Image 1 (spheres, rainbow, N blue to C red):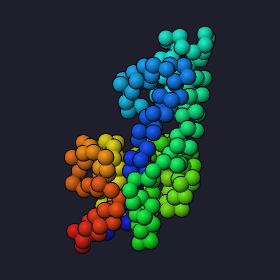
Image 2 (image 1 turned 90 degrees about the horizontal axis):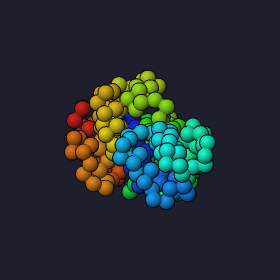
Image 3 (image 1 turned 90 degrees about the vertical axis):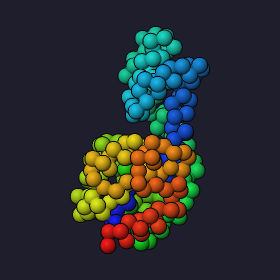
Image 4 (image 1 turned 180 degrees about the vertical axis):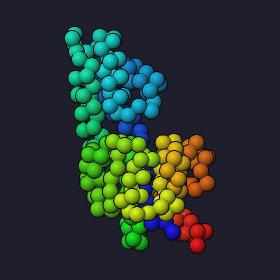
Length: 224
C-alpha cells in the first residue's frame, strides 16, 4: 500500500526548468551581453548546483576581465547566487503549474497520503516558493539540496515509519531516477514535455499529474 508520495519540484509540479536556466543568463548579462560565459558553464558543468554555477560564472567573468579589476570570485559568486535565488523565487512563485498539479495535490491529501517535496533547490527558497503558490499546507515536509535526494528519501521513511515499497517518488530528471534506485522505492517519471531518458527507463510514466491518482490505485491493486 502506498503511503507517501514524494515530488520533485521543477518540471514536476511547476513548469520552471526553462526559467531556472534563463535566470543564470539574465544575472550575468549586465557584464556579458554575449552570454558566452554562462553558455560555457552549462556546457562544461551542466549538473552543477546554483552555487557551483555562480562560482564558475564569476570566475569566467573575471578571467576575461568583464568585472572590475581586483574583483573577488568568492564575493561575486555570493552576489550572483543571491540575485539568482531572488529572481527565481519571484518568477517560479508566479509561473504556470504543471497541468493538474493543484488538483492532484488536493486529491492525494484528501485521501490521507503523506506528501513531501524532494528537490535540488535549497530548502529555504523552496519553502518560500511553496508559500507564494499557496501549496505549503499540502506537504508534511520539504527536503532540498542540503542532502542527496536518496538521503532525503531515507529521512522521509524514518520520519513517517514507512518502508521503501510504500513510497513513490515523482520526478523528471536523472537524479530523481537515481535516488529511487539507491533508496529502493517506486519511481514515476513525469514526461509532460518530451520523452526524456528517465521516462524511457521507467515502467511508470505520467504525461500529466492528473493521471497520478489512477496510477497509484493500480500500484495498490497489484500489491494487494
